[in-house]
Image 1 (cartoon, rainbow over the protein chains, first blue to last red):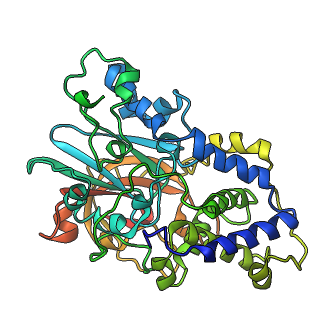
Image 2 (cartoon, rainbow over the protein chains, first blue to last red):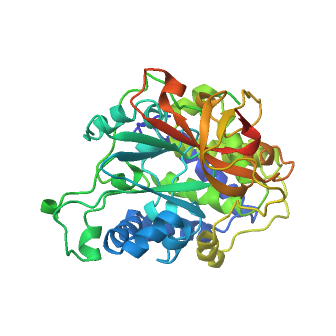
Length: 201
Length: 217
């Protein structure tokens, strides 16, 4: 798995052009369907969705309970559902437990709430190391946890997709959901980061 | 199949390098590749597990040296060649020479509803679950040449059932094209020291395991 996407990619570019040309000419592929798929994940679906879920869980105890008991239903109630998110589980971070999500076998990732995975999530360094040395991985992200924290790693081997519910930052009492959502980073919902602190938003 | 896609616990790959403000796609061809893989999946000529197996079956050196979308493209090409949807010669020069198979084609106006609907892998139960949360289990020592979602690092290891996800399509069977063979699926907690001995900074690793991967202990 090369993380170096600036390397010469003329090989796959030509391959993809040939494939699309053949499939289109044979009538197996409608290029406008392809455009619609790409547009969905490039412009409509992304980690802002997950941030809204997290901010709501921080603000609304009933929603938080629902999210932790039935994440699929709670997340769908906000309109986020579908491909790569049919079976959702939310993992609650606490002062004692920190959850990290990985897919060691491929690139499983909760698209409806986080969009498409970043290159590093699909890369060999992350897939190899997250399950054996999560604190080392967190250090790569500049995150240090105290020794007493239990680090749990979740390997997405089935069609269950995991969303980390990070801890609400201190000093955000009374904030609106919209304002809270600004603190929620993509990485904090994977478990490789923490939300932004109140002073930064 | 024991090959390089099964990366959990490998060492020497270096640090995780994140890109700030990363775009969804880095090259125009990645957009087309991503969309094409999803659109061609809608022709229903293969299932999810067969598409994963096609990617895993790439030569190890090619897999390791390829970006993720290149792996997807090569996997797609392999699936279509195997099914006679395209030929290697057509792939080489982009000129169609063989007639198209009669398969369902995804229309643009079906995209939004299809993506929103997703593809549930949950199926009705035909038997009671063998395990319940808290049960002590051991994963089997399996090394099939075919597709499995039981990673090597957690084979023949003791764990505890953390939760029950319901009955889901069993990838190890589905990838063979012999039907979905739905099985109970569990989140299994493995103590990290049972997987790695002292050489770990994790406390526990949770892996989703199907009932045929597990035995009581």
